[in-house]
Length: 403
Image 1 (cartoon, rainbow, N blue to C red):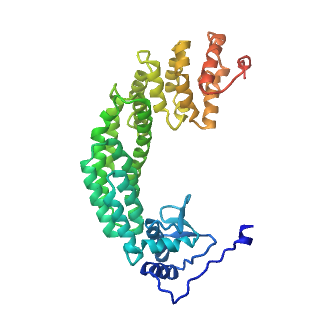
Image 2 (tube, one colour; image 1 turned 180 degrees about the vertical axis):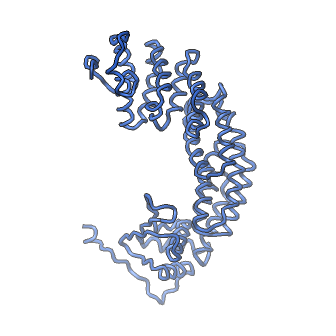
């Protein structure tokens, strides 16, 4: 109906009417790059290894820096870093915006660079500069990029806020990798990343002590992103420094329990804590000397993101099983919400398999058919409601014999 009543044609200004230099440059680029301004949206998949597609991408990114969102970048799945997906749809209002941006420069490159520099002058936070740098790198504005890197380095050197530094690192790592894809020298960004991560590793252990639950959860997400970014960077020096910091955090008894548990998990994933050494950390955290609420929080951190470890490691399963069995009823009800939050984050297949494992008595699923003569089945069934409640599942206790 909208198409029938309104249509999709765009009017034109007579050619004899003077146009601002910026508008003339944009129209010139649109014609050169074969990107017509139409009311209908059109999708483009750009291969940055091709000169024309790379120029298109640079042009569209520069327009975004001018807040002219003619092209909107779409999510691309499985296409690698050399691919970009854009959807273009022209709005006549963009012509007014172009005129308003005319005071920034006569060309798209000049105007975009001045826009970036103006925003950078007002910024006082690392994350703001980092985000701006991430947007400027694909626009290929060398002067603006150099100014942003210099300001970022100055702010990082003066910052003592470890949270702020952790927030900016993942974006900078993306900048470094994206810069390499676009044949941009990323060595300056890498040096800043090294400097910031060094400061993070020095300050982080103390930042994990004496913090409340909300601060712990925020820090937990930053751990997740920072660890992924460091692994993506593939710098063995940085990885070694980060893992040493995780060891310090995990070994400190005063560390927030959820952070301590997650640090232990990251070390296990990196094969720095395995076997008996891992069991020492785990057994200490889940021992009777540890308050149940603290043990439950530590377990939440350790199991963050996946319950597969419990399915594969029988020793860990047994430690958790013994800990749950040792809880008094009133204590169990206190920690149950935290435990249910932990298991609720697992996938449905993981939860189903954990339920099957609990039903089989903690074995692999085949061990329950070979019960020894000394096994007290009735006593074992008394513990099943606790396990199933923990997993958020239900079970018919009378149906556990032979099924």
